[in-house]
View 1 (tube, rainbow, N blue to C red):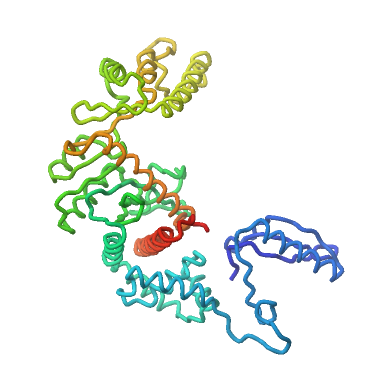
View 2 (view 1 turned 90 degrees about the vertical axis):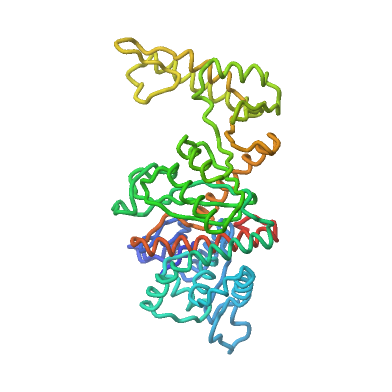
Length: 453
């Protein structure tokens, strides 16, 4: 079974020479990264292999671990051979983290071992079995593992409860302020079913089925709850069931949820209000009428950091944001002018273009004026009145922690793409990803190092 990291391959050529290559095994396919050369003499072949090793050390962050009994790491004196190799330091360190988080209360050795191996090398269940045996001499039968891992999904509520307990004890978390957002995780297949469905993809994988993941974190980005939904679910339909179930389950007296404009709808806001849940969400201020926008822009008067309130909506002005908005509007206006002179290329609808019936394309002057007036202006809708406006805005700006959490989970923790097919396997995959994220966030809190380091 070939590993995912960079490795050296020897290939015999038609001339009888041996070619030395560096690449990665992706399944059974070898992805070539570097061709070092070919030779027939053993001394030259050895030199090429050394060059390949140096190339991996220079261009790859992976550690060089050689488990051969005859390697320099193991064989330190002639005549002595290693009978077993084990990453005891890594194992002990991760096991201690596992216990500190309270996961040993779950009384599941197989969960612990698969969590630990996922930190060292995220892989499929079958390969994880191989790695557990190779690194730690832990032997599991394939049938036993598949059966027990599928049973682990029943531990979701306990795992979430342990994450919440850790946040309460170490991060002063009390549910008074939570941040919620959703993302999509796509599958490495084109076959959909009742759960893996095509929908609006945040990964630009429009032809591949996906699922929707809702994540709730505290103000530091520490995960405290998650849920999964079919891939074609509208993200605005996820916030109410998640938030209301959390409020009821943990008997929360006052809960404030922060979310972006994608969650905003009159129906959702009414539901939050009816359930006595405070909210701070992004406001779609571009949908305001021109007269309303003029009044807001006049009162802000392009004063950096100024905040005003209009009923349930807060507005603030940022000169830094204004520069970016102006640049975006300039590009959009330039594109609109080009499409008007080349109407055959106007395949997509542009906000800056008006297309009256039976007439040529024209610039939408009212929309352009609205966008210009809103340069540097952002809106926040809230039902909270007993907290200073600036503090509410600062709380909303912490929403980037959720977006960062999604990036870390998807890329650094390799939560995507998903190769599982059955729903219980998908739920197991997300459970492992949550544990890994919780563990690394707790380690990051102490070490202050980036996740990859």
